[in-house]
Length: 394
Ligand code: LCS
Image (cartoon, rainbow, N blue to C red):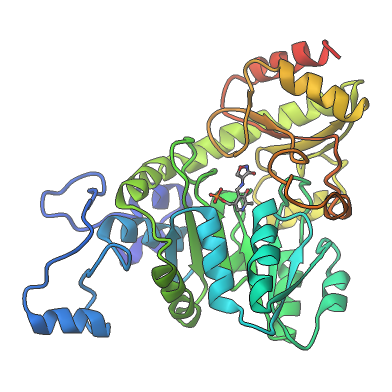
């Protein structure tokens, strides 16, 4: 559907992934196959030479996966998309495609723990250097650039500190210094933030979160702004073998249809929960881009279409009080992940970011007492009542 770019975002969620199916099926069929037959040797050769767009083998491409890729590329205003087995599959693919021995990458210091872990534990072995800085201030980025810097990798808002980075400012710096700007857009989803429109070169998501939204798969997707980057990144996914499975793609397509209404509802709840927490006498601080107290409230208004559904906060009693809270919530599940319909609570210092050194966590403002709250779409009165009864136990 070439005219799909003219539709509004909500319509694209329903229609942009449509494929031509001989039976007129309303949903994308699951092509649960590992391989595809060629009608003859010449056609097979053409597929391999890239002269025909016929399918070859599911690690390379599959119609169900292509439908998801096409749809997300449209939603992010990119040239094309590459689906991966997980969000970390997307991170590995991006690093593998863009960096080589002797190169340097600059990254936000509060990125999702394993996005940093894989760089420092594995890519460092192959001679790739990386620096982790607060990218909230663009001047820090300029200062960190070295002659061998090739990639500027940001996550905004950051997991779990909810700090923002100015994507437009990063795009200007990246252009001036010939860097590829990569944005992890997981915390916002394309409904709330579209980094390519703001100048990013590559955007990626852990699909596991808002885009799928139902806590039943893990998945990732990379969107490139142009064909050149697409052709650079896609072979890395194919050869690493971190492709998505067709059934997984089907579930994501199904979840994606309700992205806008899920995010709207979760965000509406999050605004109320953040306000409740900020006014609670046992809470020391709350970080949520929709609160006027957030230091980058104005940037959030400019580059995001809404503050989202992720909140971080700390109790006045620090970690011991945080533990009482996390052990006593009943509706909120004590679990990692986010962006699903259910409310989750977790402790980054001992869970998602536990593999980082204490020093790295401190530099990134991931305090031991920080609690991360992923707001779901339940009745907000129930979410707040749950927090209230758990806070009363402290
Ligand atoms: N990027 C961000 C911002 C993430 O939050 C995650 C996962 C990933 C990438 C990796 O995606 P995955 O491979 O898990 O699909 N974040 C998680 C979290 O905060 N709790 O559990 C997983």
